Length: 195
Length: 195
DNA sequence: AAATACAATTGACAAATATCAACTACTCAT
DNA sequence: ATGAGTAGTTGATATTTGTCAATTGTATTT
Image (cartoon, rainbow over all chains, first blue to last red; front, side):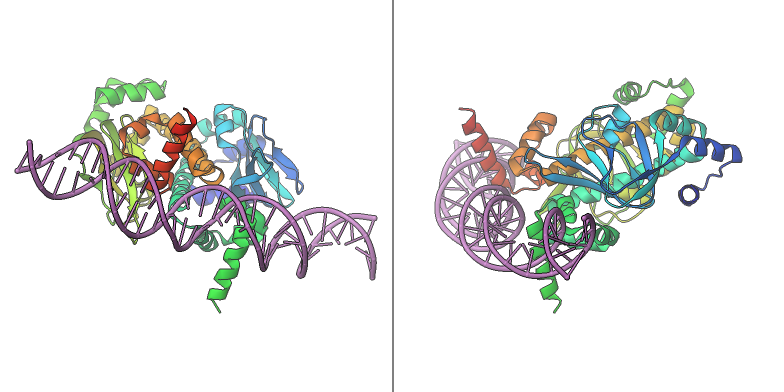
């Protein structure tokens, strides 16, 4: 919980009262998820928002052929949820599961709504999160339509080395929208170039 | 200006006072942009947020070879800006120009900041916009990494027919991240299938 | 330590998409 | 109405990426 409070203070300058801290402590419930366990399954409605304090997770869809397509990774200090399902109450097309044993703080939609209305710092935090999210999303879209597979991988290496280190290569390939074999070959070529 | 007020009322239930309407009217400046004229050029800092009341615009980057890559279209009731540059004050890598003669309402960053703090309805509207934007961005990312070129085009036809009608085919191709020739062939095949 | 399962690599080939060039159709300005 | 410029189409070919299958490497379980 302490790591979460630090996170909040880092992203908002607005002070938080003792009383507000208590509110937060009651609304956010700690939870442990073991490797390969699901936080959300396709077909469910995403009722919770989760803040990762330790561990690594991924959000992905599964197509007709059973192939997984990873849309998001999450590690410490990241939020996980299917935003569409969470905000709209719609049925989710995604799965979220843990790749490492994970501890997180999870809040129910109703409490989140309440928290945002009653605690100014959390409203600011939300706006800040949305802003960052929007910027990151635009970058990823731009990368997807302008860069080749190799360029996207190098871009990821530069901007998100933590993901590349903590998730296996076939998941990185899925995130980049390419086949595992292609990523393997790209890495080999990039390596040869540096000889 | 009236179309803008209708838009606000459509997306927020929070009432707006006469005084607030005046504030809005002073902060948002009407502007006309003729076809092919720039609203933002690469290298500039995006100081304004624009709401399109009439017309059609696009946001795009230009690569080393001079090829344009369109990241966003905008028509009536859409907002245009380079979010990254606008929020962070960074130099923009994008151009925004008009494809049709356009009329818009434009607000300076400082006024926007002020407006969001002083008018509750605008805070709600901003949160709502961000939410929708996040959902749309996630869908586009998912489409980019999971769908083939043809599927992406059909998806666009279904979900954003207005864009397909108002922008030329080579721009649609750019938005989808494919070459104009490939889009031309995709359309031919799709047409043949429906014979 | 052996056995098993899964991840990564590699090769051969297929499919998708890009590139280049030629041609046609259309629009717009004069 | 004419000519210039641009958008769209089509064909030939090159490049990129995917698919399938076999192999190797690596970690985990027993």
